[in-house]
Length: 203
Image (tube, rainbow, N blue to C red):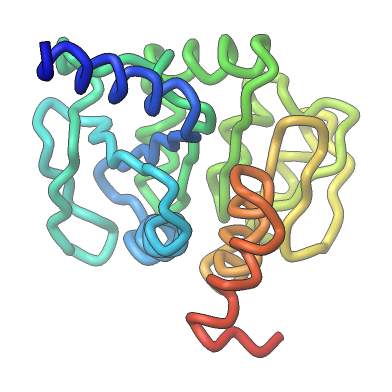
């Protein structure tokens, strides 16, 4: 009986607490991914690292090996468990994200459901190529802003942009701003301010 009650409680918690999926493909910019992970952790927001690879191990663009919580094809992984899908940048990480049909289909479906999406650096180009940024304000690494324009985005130069349910950001240097904005979106302003003070962010 006690085990049953605990399982019900865990199920209810998983339904009410926000959860983020952070997708790591080979060649990911590891700091962009881990800064976001760190900030969400400090805010007590659950964030699972998902390997867009055959195994749960991914090597970053700077040859750092990262161990993930799930691989994309694991039988116990489901996109439906997440409130926000996050794509970090890096090369060839962004290319590997873009070429994964299962992930791209899930991103489009997530968007149709009105759930949150976020991407940084080169990765907003994935959203653009999927048609999710047409006639919308967005930003990315300067080297990928032409791609956004090609697919109809209204490119702006803010550190991050939220348009509808989509967050985009420029690069590693803007990840703290983006992460704090995600905390405010998923939790509340007070939680964001506590994290901001905790990391001694003075901007």
